[in-house]
Amino acid sequence: MTTATIQTGLKKADRSEVSQALTKVLADSFAVYLKTHGYHWNVRGPEFFTLHNLLEQQYTEIWGALDDIAERIRALGILAPQGYATFGNLTAIKDGDPEQNAEAMLKELMRDHETLIATTRDTLSLADDAGDEATADLMTQRLAAHEKFAWMLRSTLGGR
Image (cartoon, rainbow, N blue to C red; front, side, top):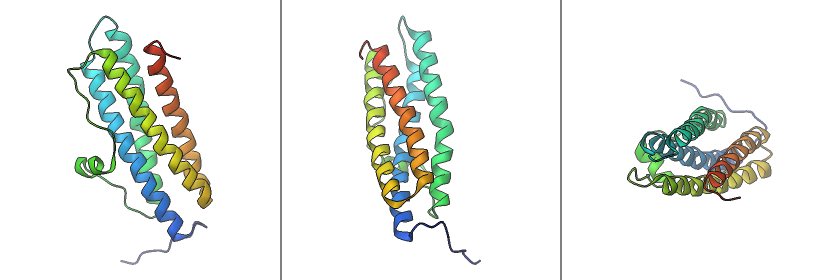
């Protein structure tokens, strides 16, 4: 089987560096997805229905984005990571604790989105420096989504 040379106008080193950063975005996104979905199942309290629905909106959107991120990694010529252990080694996001109360769950998710925002900003900067407009566009979309999610969680907690 022959491998076709990738001709995207990006240097091989830039494609490699950007795709490696994207693997961290993918791993962090997957971890936040899993935690958000788990908290959706396990949230309790007087605001259950509202929080249950809020978390469902967020994990559904994140789930859809995972494929876009992985496919961008593949378009850059790198294999996308897969598997829990692989993602666990790439992410700084820790597993959630279903025993927590709703407020603690939301605070943790807000901080996780802030971590993901930082990871996304770093990747956006690398993509910009490499002239990789497609990755920069995807990271801009992800940045807007995670900033919105963090804001929604912060506002739900009574913050600005």
